[in-house]
Length: 139
Ligand code: IDP
Ligand code: MG
Image (cartoon, rainbow, N blue to C red; front, side):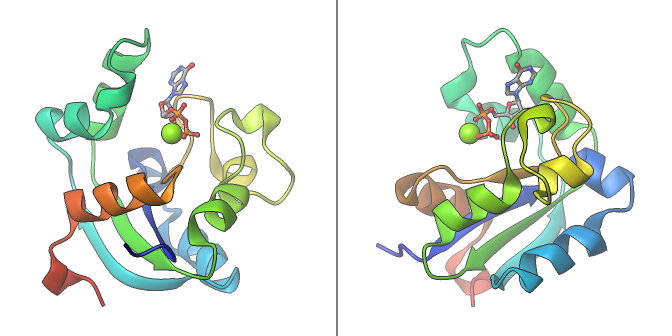
């Protein structure tokens, strides 16, 4: 199992606001290597499957609506301790609680529209990378 990779999405709000370049710059400046990347748009079925773990939560419908409303940038990032280090760079789910300098502190509007996704474990990173990328799209 690959343990030095994590999966990220720049969510629709980041794309809409023109933050792709700034966020990717912050990611690469923080030592992550981009080993796969594309602009794509999730279908309702994609988003429901990707966020299945949250399907009983009250915000699930809102989350699926948000994540499917426009294109995202999906990417795989490589770095030693990638999953944990990327979660630190991303910051807390609620941007009001996110540490200074984190991506969500800088770019997220709210707990729902929070700019980026980062895998929460090595197992989920592997599942999420495979959800969006074939082997031939990963370098
Ligand atoms: P995470 O993205 O920090 O891991 P999770 O708890 O896994 O946070 O939630 C997944 C996504 O669901 C969040 O990134 C956010 O977009 C959305 N979300 C989480 N909590 C809420 C909420 O209370 N209201 C609306 N949307 C939420
Ligand atoms: Mg999560």
